[in-house]
Length: 306
Image 1 (cartoon, rainbow, N blue to C red):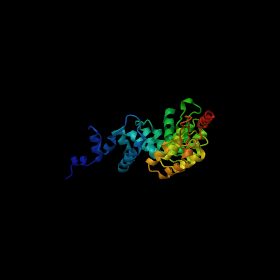
Image 2 (image 1 turned 90 degrees about the vertical axis):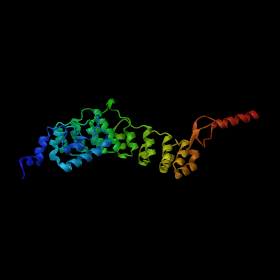
Image 3 (image 1 turned 120 degrees about the vertical axis):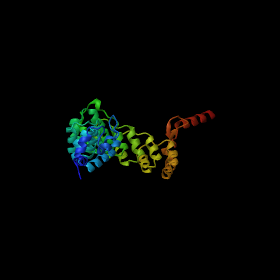
Image 4 (image 1 turned 180 degrees about the vertical axis):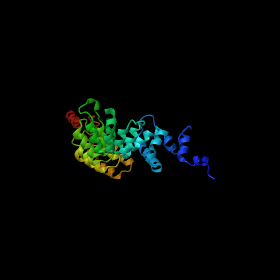
């Protein structure tokens, strides 16, 4: 026969109230409470795992349990904020912020990483300094989220030397984000370094090279890395549009990596493409270079013979 004792034990609500006086957290909170959180900003690589963990918990227990969850384990609020921003849940973000949970230092970065423009807009009042916006812009550029890049660009004061970000276009070019490269070229003042061309060539981003080649500097390394990675179409493009050529390492690297088509192309055009130090004049020239120093030496020999 059920007793009052049984009734208390079988009541989830009463047992939770009783167990509040014990050390630790309720069992359903354990997966979240034991998740290792770095003391500094959470790396972007951990965002998918955090999102999956919170999603599973909310599916099992429901969003109505959030107030209790934050009471049981306030530090979980940081994970909830990241989940809300990563999944674009404005209502959940407001619940977390209104509960005065511990804030994550890089929420704007999370929004940029996941391409959540709505969340980026919502987070502007909570973003304390331009450094956070600059970090988020770098993340958005690397991920190719043009809408986030455009929005964050408008949030930064224009023509401020403290906001100089010289490698933005390099990163966009390296990752093959042509729309971002175009936006940065026409709307920001930093430009790019030769690294942009080298990385685009290394990864076979022909559309990036086509846009940048009239506007950016080059080195022989561009064709070297294209040969190393087997991008023969990039090599043809560089051959047509540039005179920098490649070093002697290009053919060796292509052969070592088994890029037969590249090796064949270099054998056919190597005399004009491959640059090396001329043993006569000491300058780096194509192998087919008709050295004036050799001609002058021959002329002197003829004069001496006469």
